[in-house]
Image (cartoon, rainbow, N blue to C red):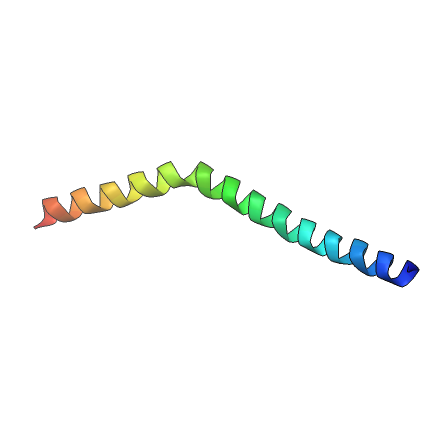
Length: 51
């Protein structure tokens, strides 16, 4: 029983850690998404001017 409890807590810690990393990356993507979209828009407009 104790081994199962330890395994469950260890597994939960790993899953929680991965979900936290995914949450942080998602927040960073949401923060940087407008800048990336603006950068792509500027690149497209510059390409249109070059042609």
